[in-house]
Length: 247
Image (cartoon, rainbow, N blue to C red; front, side, top):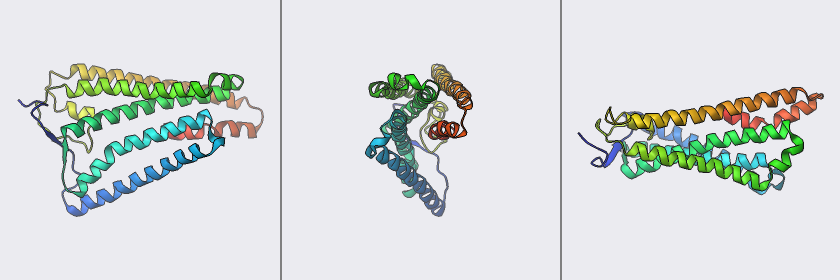
Protein backbone atom coordinates (compact mmCIF):
# COMPACT_ATOMS: atom_id res chain seq x y z
CA UNK A 1 0.00 0.00 0.00
CA UNK A 2 1.36 3.39 -1.03
CA UNK A 3 0.31 6.68 0.47
CA UNK A 4 0.43 10.37 -0.43
CA UNK A 5 3.66 10.87 1.55
CA UNK A 6 5.67 8.33 -0.46
CA UNK A 7 4.41 9.55 -3.86
CA UNK A 8 6.55 12.46 -5.04
CA UNK A 9 4.85 13.09 -8.39
CA UNK A 10 1.65 12.26 -10.29
CA UNK A 11 0.91 11.60 -13.94
CA UNK A 12 -1.74 13.66 -15.74
CA UNK A 13 -3.83 12.54 -18.70
CA UNK A 14 -2.03 12.74 -22.04
CA UNK A 15 -4.15 13.89 -24.99
CA UNK A 16 -2.14 11.96 -27.55
CA UNK A 17 0.85 9.67 -27.95
CA UNK A 18 2.38 11.21 -31.07
CA UNK A 19 4.45 14.39 -31.27
CA UNK A 20 2.27 15.90 -34.02
CA UNK A 21 -0.96 15.56 -31.99
CA UNK A 22 0.77 16.86 -28.87
CA UNK A 23 1.83 19.98 -30.78
CA UNK A 24 -1.72 20.34 -32.12
CA UNK A 25 -3.03 20.16 -28.56
CA UNK A 26 -0.48 22.77 -27.48
CA UNK A 27 -1.49 25.16 -30.27
CA UNK A 28 -5.21 24.67 -29.59
CA UNK A 29 -4.87 25.35 -25.87
CA UNK A 30 -2.51 28.26 -26.56
CA UNK A 31 -5.15 29.86 -28.78
CA UNK A 32 -7.83 29.40 -26.10
CA UNK A 33 -5.53 30.79 -23.41
CA UNK A 34 -4.51 33.84 -25.44
CA UNK A 35 -8.15 34.56 -26.29
CA UNK A 36 -9.04 34.41 -22.58
CA UNK A 37 -6.11 36.68 -21.69
CA UNK A 38 -7.04 39.18 -24.39
CA UNK A 39 -10.78 39.22 -23.66
CA UNK A 40 -10.51 39.48 -19.89
CA UNK A 41 -7.57 41.86 -20.13
CA UNK A 42 -9.60 44.23 -22.31
CA UNK A 43 -12.52 44.07 -19.86
CA UNK A 44 -10.29 44.82 -16.88
CA UNK A 45 -8.44 47.65 -18.66
CA UNK A 46 -11.60 49.27 -20.00
CA UNK A 47 -13.41 49.21 -16.66
CA UNK A 48 -10.36 50.46 -14.76
CA UNK A 49 -9.67 53.35 -17.16
CA UNK A 50 -13.20 54.54 -17.96
CA UNK A 51 -14.70 56.48 -15.03
CA UNK A 52 -18.18 56.11 -16.51
CA UNK A 53 -17.91 52.37 -15.81
CA UNK A 54 -17.12 52.77 -12.12
CA UNK A 55 -20.51 51.37 -11.12
CA UNK A 56 -21.40 48.28 -9.05
CA UNK A 57 -22.25 46.14 -12.09
CA UNK A 58 -18.91 46.78 -13.80
CA UNK A 59 -17.00 46.52 -10.54
CA UNK A 60 -18.34 42.99 -10.10
CA UNK A 61 -17.65 42.24 -13.77
CA UNK A 62 -14.01 43.31 -13.25
CA UNK A 63 -13.74 40.90 -10.32
CA UNK A 64 -15.29 38.16 -12.45
CA UNK A 65 -12.68 38.72 -15.17
CA UNK A 66 -9.89 38.48 -12.59
CA UNK A 67 -11.29 35.18 -11.32
CA UNK A 68 -11.65 33.85 -14.85
CA UNK A 69 -8.05 34.75 -15.68
CA UNK A 70 -6.87 33.05 -12.51
CA UNK A 71 -8.83 29.84 -13.04
CA UNK A 72 -7.75 29.33 -16.66
CA UNK A 73 -4.13 30.18 -15.74
CA UNK A 74 -4.23 27.45 -13.09
CA UNK A 75 -4.83 24.60 -15.54
CA UNK A 76 -3.90 25.44 -19.14
CA UNK A 77 -0.23 26.52 -18.83
CA UNK A 78 0.75 23.25 -17.12
CA UNK A 79 -1.12 21.19 -19.70
CA UNK A 80 0.49 23.13 -22.54
CA UNK A 81 3.95 22.69 -21.01
CA UNK A 82 3.41 18.94 -20.68
CA UNK A 83 2.37 18.68 -24.33
CA UNK A 84 5.29 20.80 -25.50
CA UNK A 85 7.89 18.81 -23.55
CA UNK A 86 6.10 15.44 -24.01
CA UNK A 87 5.71 14.69 -20.32
CA UNK A 88 2.80 13.93 -17.97
CA UNK A 89 4.42 14.59 -14.61
CA UNK A 90 3.16 17.02 -11.99
CA UNK A 91 4.89 17.34 -8.63
CA UNK A 92 3.19 17.01 -5.25
CA UNK A 93 3.55 20.76 -4.62
CA UNK A 94 2.15 21.62 -8.05
CA UNK A 95 -0.76 19.25 -7.44
CA UNK A 96 -1.52 21.02 -4.16
CA UNK A 97 -1.29 24.49 -5.72
CA UNK A 98 -3.42 23.57 -8.73
CA UNK A 99 -6.12 21.89 -6.66
CA UNK A 100 -6.30 24.71 -4.10
CA UNK A 101 -6.32 27.56 -6.62
CA UNK A 102 -8.91 25.89 -8.86
CA UNK A 103 -11.34 25.28 -5.97
CA UNK A 104 -10.71 28.76 -4.59
CA UNK A 105 -11.23 30.62 -7.87
CA UNK A 106 -14.23 28.62 -9.10
CA UNK A 107 -15.91 28.81 -5.69
CA UNK A 108 -15.38 32.57 -5.56
CA UNK A 109 -16.70 32.88 -9.11
CA UNK A 110 -19.89 31.02 -8.17
CA UNK A 111 -20.40 33.29 -5.16
CA UNK A 112 -19.70 36.39 -7.23
CA UNK A 113 -22.28 35.40 -9.85
CA UNK A 114 -24.81 35.21 -7.03
CA UNK A 115 -23.80 38.68 -5.81
CA UNK A 116 -24.19 40.00 -9.37
CA UNK A 117 -27.73 38.60 -9.52
CA UNK A 118 -28.46 40.43 -6.26
CA UNK A 119 -27.07 43.62 -7.80
CA UNK A 120 -29.26 43.34 -10.92
CA UNK A 121 -32.33 42.55 -8.79
CA UNK A 122 -32.04 45.77 -6.80
CA UNK A 123 -31.08 47.84 -9.87
CA UNK A 124 -34.27 46.85 -11.72
CA UNK A 125 -36.79 45.84 -9.07
CA UNK A 126 -35.90 48.42 -6.38
CA UNK A 127 -34.17 51.28 -8.23
CA UNK A 128 -35.00 53.91 -5.57
CA UNK A 129 -33.02 51.95 -2.95
CA UNK A 130 -30.20 50.90 -5.28
CA UNK A 131 -27.64 53.61 -4.52
CA UNK A 132 -28.35 53.37 -0.79
CA UNK A 133 -27.96 49.59 -0.55
CA UNK A 134 -25.14 49.16 -3.08
CA UNK A 135 -22.70 51.97 -2.39
CA UNK A 136 -18.97 51.68 -2.89
CA UNK A 137 -18.29 50.20 0.53
CA UNK A 138 -21.11 47.66 0.25
CA UNK A 139 -19.81 46.49 -3.15
CA UNK A 140 -16.30 46.02 -1.77
CA UNK A 141 -17.67 44.05 1.19
CA UNK A 142 -19.76 41.78 -1.06
CA UNK A 143 -16.85 41.15 -3.44
CA UNK A 144 -14.58 40.40 -0.46
CA UNK A 145 -17.20 37.99 0.91
CA UNK A 146 -17.28 36.16 -2.44
CA UNK A 147 -13.47 35.85 -2.53
CA UNK A 148 -13.38 34.88 1.14
CA UNK A 149 -16.02 32.17 0.78
CA UNK A 150 -14.07 30.64 -2.10
CA UNK A 151 -10.88 30.71 -0.04
CA UNK A 152 -12.45 29.02 3.00
CA UNK A 153 -14.08 26.38 0.80
CA UNK A 154 -10.73 25.70 -0.89
CA UNK A 155 -8.90 25.36 2.43
CA UNK A 156 -11.49 22.89 3.71
CA UNK A 157 -11.70 20.71 0.59
CA UNK A 158 -7.99 20.77 -0.27
CA UNK A 159 -6.89 19.88 3.26
CA UNK A 160 -9.31 16.96 3.45
CA UNK A 161 -8.50 15.72 -0.06
CA UNK A 162 -4.73 15.74 0.35
CA UNK A 163 -4.96 14.08 3.78
CA UNK A 164 -6.51 10.94 2.23
CA UNK A 165 -4.16 7.92 1.99
CA UNK A 166 -3.63 6.77 -1.59
CA UNK A 167 -3.77 3.10 -2.53
CA UNK A 168 -4.42 3.15 -6.29
CA UNK A 169 -1.20 4.51 -7.78
CA UNK A 170 -0.46 8.00 -9.03
CA UNK A 171 -2.15 8.25 -12.46
CA UNK A 172 -4.86 10.93 -12.76
CA UNK A 173 -7.43 10.48 -15.54
CA UNK A 174 -7.62 14.23 -16.24
CA UNK A 175 -5.31 16.89 -17.69
CA UNK A 176 -5.45 18.86 -14.41
CA UNK A 177 -5.84 18.00 -10.74
CA UNK A 178 -9.41 17.81 -9.46
CA UNK A 179 -11.00 16.21 -6.41
CA UNK A 180 -12.94 13.33 -8.08
CA UNK A 181 -9.83 12.05 -9.86
CA UNK A 182 -7.74 12.23 -6.68
CA UNK A 183 -10.46 10.40 -4.73
CA UNK A 184 -10.26 7.57 -7.26
CA UNK A 185 -6.72 6.96 -6.01
CA UNK A 186 -7.80 6.88 -2.35
CA UNK A 187 -8.43 3.80 -0.27
CA UNK A 188 -12.06 2.78 -0.73
CA UNK A 189 -12.86 3.12 2.98
CA UNK A 190 -11.13 6.42 3.58
CA UNK A 191 -12.88 9.08 1.52
CA UNK A 192 -16.45 9.08 2.91
CA UNK A 193 -15.78 12.34 4.77
CA UNK A 194 -14.47 13.99 1.62
CA UNK A 195 -17.50 12.82 -0.37
CA UNK A 196 -19.69 14.38 2.31
CA UNK A 197 -17.82 17.67 1.93
CA UNK A 198 -18.23 17.50 -1.84
CA UNK A 199 -21.97 16.98 -1.42
CA UNK A 200 -22.05 19.96 0.94
CA UNK A 201 -20.17 22.08 -1.60
CA UNK A 202 -22.51 20.92 -4.35
CA UNK A 203 -25.50 21.94 -2.24
CA UNK A 204 -23.98 25.40 -1.77
CA UNK A 205 -23.42 25.75 -5.52
CA UNK A 206 -26.98 24.59 -6.20
CA UNK A 207 -28.24 27.11 -3.64
CA UNK A 208 -26.39 29.88 -5.51
CA UNK A 209 -27.95 28.71 -8.77
CA UNK A 210 -31.46 28.70 -7.26
CA UNK A 211 -30.89 32.22 -5.88
CA UNK A 212 -29.84 33.42 -9.35
CA UNK A 213 -32.89 31.83 -11.00
CA UNK A 214 -35.31 33.30 -8.45
CA UNK A 215 -33.67 36.73 -8.80
CA UNK A 216 -34.10 36.68 -12.56
CA UNK A 217 -37.72 35.55 -12.32
CA UNK A 218 -38.35 38.68 -10.25
CA UNK A 219 -36.32 40.77 -12.72
CA UNK A 220 -38.29 39.49 -15.72
CA UNK A 221 -41.58 40.24 -13.95
CA UNK A 222 -40.40 43.79 -13.24
CA UNK A 223 -39.16 44.30 -16.81
CA UNK A 224 -42.46 43.13 -18.30
CA UNK A 225 -44.30 45.74 -16.21
CA UNK A 226 -42.31 48.58 -17.79
CA UNK A 227 -44.76 50.32 -20.18
CA UNK A 228 -42.36 51.38 -22.96
CA UNK A 229 -40.54 48.92 -25.20
CA UNK A 230 -37.41 51.09 -25.09
CA UNK A 231 -37.44 51.00 -21.29
CA UNK A 232 -37.82 47.22 -21.27
CA UNK A 233 -34.94 46.83 -23.72
CA UNK A 234 -32.68 49.15 -21.70
CA UNK A 235 -33.44 47.36 -18.42
CA UNK A 236 -32.90 43.91 -19.90
CA UNK A 237 -29.67 44.90 -21.68
CA UNK A 238 -28.01 45.66 -18.33
CA UNK A 239 -28.45 41.97 -17.42
CA UNK A 240 -26.90 40.56 -20.58
CA UNK A 241 -23.25 40.40 -19.38
CA UNK A 242 -24.26 38.51 -16.26
CA UNK A 243 -26.70 36.23 -18.11
CA UNK A 244 -24.02 35.40 -20.69
CA UNK A 245 -21.58 34.27 -18.01
CA UNK A 246 -24.20 32.27 -16.08
CA UNK A 247 -25.33 30.57 -19.31
